[in-house]
Amino acid sequence: MQDNVNSRLDRIENLLERLVASREVAQEYYSTTDVARILKKAEWTVREWCRLGRIEAAKRICGRGFAKEWMISHNELQRIKSHGLLPRR
Image (cartoon, rainbow, N blue to C red; front, top):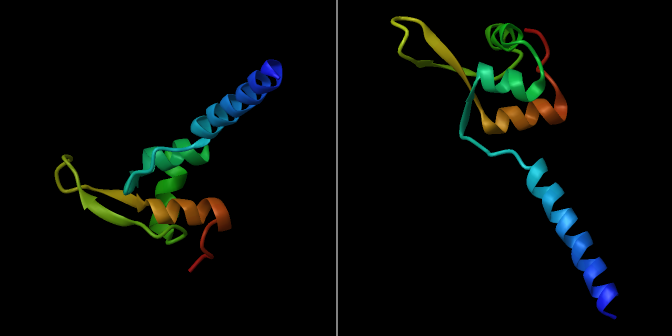
Protein backbone atom coordinates (compact mmCIF):
# COMPACT_ATOMS: atom_id res chain seq x y z
CA MET A 1 0.00 0.00 0.00
CA GLN A 2 2.75 2.44 1.00
CA ASP A 3 4.70 1.65 -2.21
CA ASN A 4 1.62 2.32 -4.32
CA VAL A 5 1.08 5.71 -2.69
CA ASN A 6 4.75 6.63 -3.07
CA SER A 7 4.83 5.66 -6.74
CA ARG A 8 1.68 7.71 -7.43
CA LEU A 9 3.15 10.69 -5.63
CA ASP A 10 6.35 10.35 -7.68
CA ARG A 11 4.33 10.33 -10.92
CA ILE A 12 2.33 13.37 -9.84
CA GLU A 13 5.51 15.20 -8.90
CA ASN A 14 7.09 14.40 -12.28
CA LEU A 15 3.99 15.61 -14.12
CA LEU A 16 3.99 18.86 -12.14
CA GLU A 17 7.68 19.45 -12.86
CA ARG A 18 7.08 18.97 -16.60
CA LEU A 19 4.06 21.26 -16.52
CA VAL A 20 5.97 24.04 -14.76
CA ALA A 21 8.94 23.65 -17.12
CA SER A 22 6.71 23.85 -20.20
CA ARG A 23 4.95 27.06 -19.17
CA GLU A 24 6.25 30.34 -20.48
CA VAL A 25 6.16 33.45 -18.38
CA ALA A 26 3.51 35.45 -20.19
CA GLN A 27 4.25 39.09 -20.80
CA GLU A 28 1.79 41.59 -22.20
CA TYR A 29 4.18 42.54 -25.04
CA TYR A 30 7.40 41.06 -26.40
CA SER A 31 10.32 42.65 -28.23
CA THR A 32 11.57 41.25 -31.53
CA THR A 33 14.50 39.78 -29.59
CA ASP A 34 12.15 37.88 -27.28
CA VAL A 35 9.96 36.61 -30.13
CA ALA A 36 13.03 35.54 -32.13
CA ARG A 37 14.30 33.53 -29.15
CA ILE A 38 10.92 31.91 -28.52
CA LEU A 39 10.36 31.02 -32.21
CA LYS A 40 14.04 30.09 -32.78
CA LYS A 41 14.41 32.61 -35.61
CA ALA A 42 16.83 35.47 -36.24
CA GLU A 43 15.83 38.84 -34.81
CA TRP A 44 16.19 40.36 -38.29
CA THR A 45 13.63 37.86 -39.60
CA VAL A 46 11.10 38.84 -36.93
CA ARG A 47 11.66 42.55 -37.65
CA GLU A 48 11.07 41.90 -41.36
CA TRP A 49 7.85 39.99 -40.61
CA CYS A 50 6.70 43.05 -38.63
CA ARG A 51 7.69 45.44 -41.40
CA LEU A 52 5.98 43.36 -44.08
CA GLY A 53 2.79 42.92 -42.04
CA ARG A 54 3.23 39.17 -41.57
CA ILE A 55 2.93 39.78 -37.80
CA GLU A 56 0.52 42.22 -36.15
CA ALA A 57 2.94 44.52 -34.33
CA ALA A 58 3.18 48.14 -33.28
CA LYS A 59 6.07 50.54 -32.82
CA ARG A 60 6.93 51.98 -29.43
CA ILE A 61 9.30 54.70 -28.35
CA CYS A 62 12.55 53.42 -26.91
CA GLY A 63 15.75 55.05 -25.70
CA ARG A 64 17.42 55.15 -29.12
CA GLY A 65 16.59 58.64 -30.30
CA PHE A 66 14.02 58.79 -33.09
CA ALA A 67 14.11 55.04 -33.81
CA LYS A 68 11.12 53.09 -32.55
CA GLU A 69 11.10 49.45 -31.54
CA TRP A 70 8.58 46.81 -32.63
CA MET A 71 6.39 45.26 -29.92
CA ILE A 72 4.36 42.08 -30.38
CA SER A 73 1.45 41.21 -28.10
CA HIS A 74 1.21 37.93 -26.22
CA ASN A 75 -1.99 37.06 -28.12
CA GLU A 76 -0.21 37.62 -31.44
CA LEU A 77 2.67 35.39 -30.35
CA GLN A 78 0.20 32.63 -29.47
CA ARG A 79 -1.55 33.09 -32.84
CA ILE A 80 1.78 32.77 -34.69
CA LYS A 81 2.61 29.59 -32.79
CA SER A 82 -0.82 28.10 -33.51
CA HIS A 83 -1.57 29.31 -37.04
CA GLY A 84 1.65 30.70 -38.50
CA LEU A 85 2.33 34.01 -40.21
CA LEU A 86 -0.27 36.20 -41.84
CA PRO A 87 -0.35 36.08 -45.66
CA ARG A 88 1.71 38.60 -47.59
CA ARG A 89 -0.03 41.87 -48.29
